Amino acid sequence: MHTWDPTTYLSYADERTRPFVELLARVPDPHGRAVASVVDLGCGPGHLTGLLARRWPGARLHGVDASTEMIASARDRVGGPGDGSEGAGETYEVADLRDWLAAPEWPGSRAGERSDVLVTNATLQWLPDPLDLLPAMVGRVAPGGVLAIGVPANFDEPSHVLRRELAAEAPYAAHTAGVASPWSPGAMAYLEALTDLGCEVDAWETTYLHVLEGEDAVFEWISGTGARPTLQALPAGSREEFAGELRRRLRAAYPPRDGRVVLPFRRAFAVARVPA
Image (cartoon, rainbow, N blue to C red; front, side):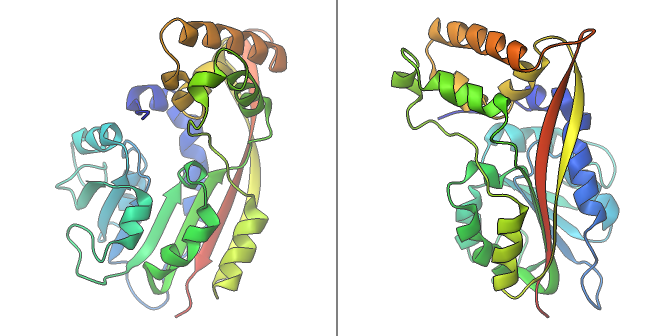
């Protein structure tokens, strides 16, 4: 079972924050009422949950993440309202997203309560059936409320393809078979599925060109996200060999220029207003 490292994940915090900010900018307020509750599914270390608090300062915020390390980091963020810390109007819960969707209530809520705004960012790619979860997610949003989804959509890029190819080779395949590997459909699939559920949907895709410092910057990027479960599945020795070979292949796919590497990163977004 892999674990997450908030420090490694946040090493590219600016690049990981921008898509969330752009998603949030397209989220409308619910029809005819103030926002009372906001849920952040897959909140990670809580650095983005504070942006939700600033957007809706009077709302109760609840962050959910399956990683105890990420939730601990979120809870350690201290300061004033909107910084992502508990006690500033936010609560946090360690839970699998699927279990949370199936539960009748969440901490601080009332049984059957639905959220005015439900946001999930860079999380659904870790689930094998993200589209199958959409009915339950829509069901967690109050009538007239909003479901906002942001997800990577770059899984045909060398940063993912090279990792998958190398992990399938000997001697690594014996350790990496069945290890979590991210995947997600594109914006069109979310548009169609959410429209079929009766939602009014705004969906789009954006390709970011991240300019990263260092010839192994792409490896450093994926080692905190998509490649982490694979790396953790390998025993000592094999892990270092795998990392060295993956670094070599990534340098060939993303040749550095003047000490910088360009990482194209496509993301899919969908903002769905639930029928009133």
